[in-house]
Length: 376
Image (cartoon, rainbow, N blue to C red; front, side, top):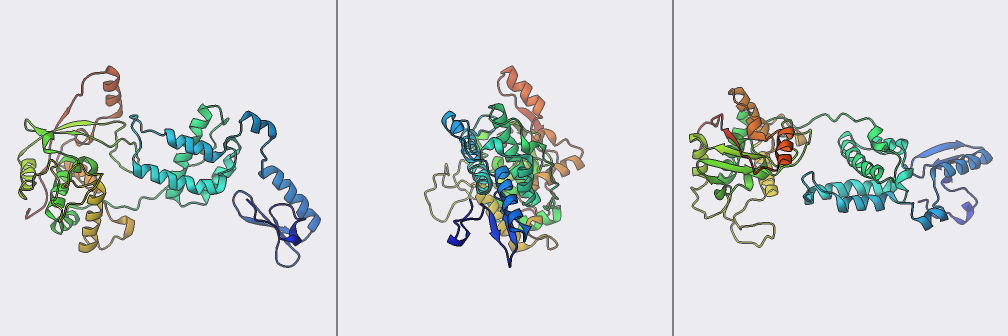
C-alpha cells in the first residue's frame, strides 16, 4: 500500500514520486522497486496511470457480493489450517513455524491480492529476490498452495509450478570416521551411546531418542520409524510412511546396549540422562528423556568445543543426522545392504498398506562393527 501523500503531491497518480530535480520515478506496487520515468510530467502521469491499472486490481462490487475474491493470505491461512502429512497426521510444530515464516514474507508482497491474480511474472520476481535455498523452500510451498487452489477451482493454473527450480549447492559435508571419533571422545556418555547406536543401526535422531527398553525383545530391536518425508537433502530417504524395522542384536550392538545401562539410572528410554534437577517439561514423557532438539544442541556444543573439522565452518559442519550417511557408507563398504536398515521402499510400503495386513517387520542385521578405537 502506498504511503499517504503530502498536500503538495495529492495531484500525483498513485506510486508516482518526484525524484531529484525535475525527474519522476515510479514505485512498483508489488515489488517496491523504483523505475525512472524521465522529466516529462505528462508522459510520467500517463505511464503511472496505465501501470496502476495493470498492476493494481480493484475489488469489484459484484465479486464482493458473490464472494469470489479470495486473498492470497486468506487462502494460505486456510491451507495451513488443513495441512497434514502424507500419513494423515498433523505436521510438526517446527515445520509449521517454518511455513509461517515463509508465508509472512509472502504476505508482505501479496497479502491483500486475490490469489487468482498472482501471475508467473510476480512469482518469479518474488523467488528471484531470495537466496537459492530460501527460493527453493518458498517455491515448494507455493506449488502446494496453488495446487490446492487449482483443485478447488479458484485458480486456472499453478504459476509457481511453471517456474524454474534453482540449484542449491550443498554446503554440509560428510562425517569421517576420524572426525566423528573426536566428537565422540569429547561427548558425555549418553551422547556417545547415541552416536554408537546411530552408526550401527543407521537410524535417524528422532528414532534413536524415542527408543525404549520395551522395544527390545526376543533378541531384536523393534523400530517404527517416525520420519515421513521425501526430502532430497537426505540422500537415502526412500520413505513416504512409517517404516517397520526389526534389527537383530549381535555382539557389537549388545555391547552398546549394555553401556546404556552402566549409569544405573532407571529410565524407560535407552538413550537418557539424569538431569541435575527435575524440571517440569510438558514435552517429556519421563524426566530422563532426551528430546531431539536437546540432542542436536548438545551435539553442536561438543563439535564447537573440540573442532573436529578445522577446515570447515558454519553450515559446512556435519550434523548428527550425517552420522546416518556415514553408517550407510560403512555398511555398503562392508558389503552389506543399508536399505533395509534405512526403511522400506515407497512401492513396498504402499502395497502393504493397500493390502490391509498386519504390520510386517523388516528383519535386518547390523553389518559393521564400530570403527572407533579405545571405546569407553
